[in-house]
Length: 134
Length: 333
Image (cartoon, rainbow over all chains, first blue to last red):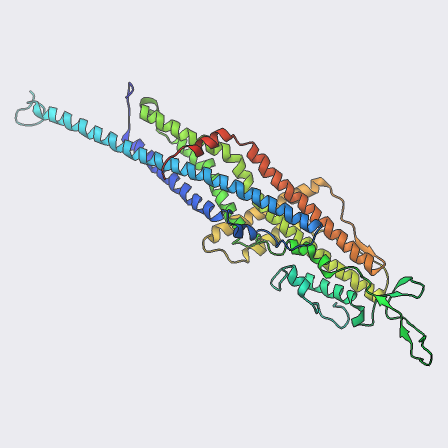
């Protein structure tokens, strides 16, 4: 640990709580992105006309729509993958924060216990008893 | 007014069916009325009205009914009809439905459109990166970050996520609206084709009544009306169970915003008014509609192409190093 090591356990706990909240929201949005995914051709077809159109402008419009929906679907998939990766990082971070918090808490408890033992072992360690310090 | 002795639906509805136009379609009414007139004009053998008469010298003239001549056969006094053909000979009903067929089946206006779910998802992802990730970084305990290696590492880890969120920010922000703009383009094509079909029918009616040339002013549906109409139409639909009211609300808001944006752009473009549907002859009036239909589809194609270019351009601006780095790393499942 670095010099001047300071950890306020309550701050870490509060931050972990916020991180959990953001992580959960990321997962909820991830589920929506999953629903919106257009990898399935049947879903793409909902956004396109039937291809049995003659020729000319209508056909060209249809082809433009196919290209657009393909591009949109492809980038939606990229967004979903990036979002999922971010959510997984948040999962990892939340887990690490929880473990770190626990480690700090255990360390603090052990340190406190040791000092308590030291205090108990001192004859004047307990204030206000019959032996007193005076 | 329907053609003489006919209804507002053609006798043969197969061209409508082939264009995927059903009675539940918003395009049905105008498509059916237009098709009924086209069918009437294409089949003069079924009535005594307008046709193109072929005279003995080979000249073809549009006439308001059959033209007879003396019976050339000896001993026969009953007159015979001159040969004739349709005033729209060479045309086919499907030609007039190509545009509508191209926008007949897209589910883009309904509240449960997959585009609406996508817009909601993208907006959520945008909002999380824009607001929540930034506030998480701000909330990081400064003492912990400055005094502990673990804290510093955790902070750096978090900053990577913020970098990714920033990098995706513009893409997501624009991406939400692009889906809505596609929906608005499809709706506008529908509205414009409905309007053009109605004006064509009016042109046919005027021509039939007056037997003269007509000039019908076919103006593209004013975009000012789209926004309100879009919202009304959207909220009238049934929300998908998975999507719910939130999606409906976001989708209609985006739809309205996209319509307003297109309105602003079209004003700045100062496009000239579309050519009127006009013509003295039946064929000219019909061809005028076909020209207008082609213009509507051509303009819409350009707009969809522009949306496609916009996505590619936006993604081109994203720093792939950051994105690929995130995607390459493995955390969690």
